[in-house]
Image (cartoon, rainbow, N blue to C red; front, side):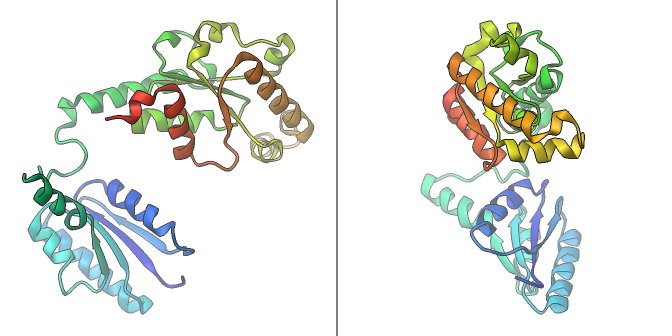
Length: 274
């Protein structure tokens, strides 16, 4: 869809509006220009955003699509008002207000996920999980693995680091990740640091051709990146995971969100219940 812009307007970070909007837009074969406008929490800021939306409408000759999560009525009424030349999709009016009627109570109308991050236990747990995952990235430390919620294993560049950080940031999961290397395959057993924590392990594998492409970007023309070596490492890693009874999946065609949800389902199903 040429000449089309999507705005994500919020009085917080805009992550909720953007996540929801992307989920909706993924149903259509379009590649619009995306604009996030966070912290729109005053009338003046709302008016400036409407002016930007209207300029875009004139310039492109199409109504911009506008996803909004705005708490204050005076701010929301400006962005969703008649003067705005965008197609406005209001998440609060679509979901929060009907729930208020159904539940018979008013919502908190708070801005963002945490009303006071300093006092939020959930926020504190997420920060602690992020710090833990950073310290235990790529086998940097084998200390305190007993505190891990999950330990991701797999060959280098199979997606362990982004998945562990996503689990920490989105779900407060303490996720360590540990690479399987040729020496492990020669010994034909898991690294000794993982032996007593096998029940927490989850494996990631990847198509060897895709792995070779990724590794070539990091270390071109090396044995590490060669297709032959990638095929060997992937085959040996999968053989080891089967032998050790470790659940695993391929990251080749799966999003981080899909991988993380599968891990939670298999390792920590309690984290799928809030």
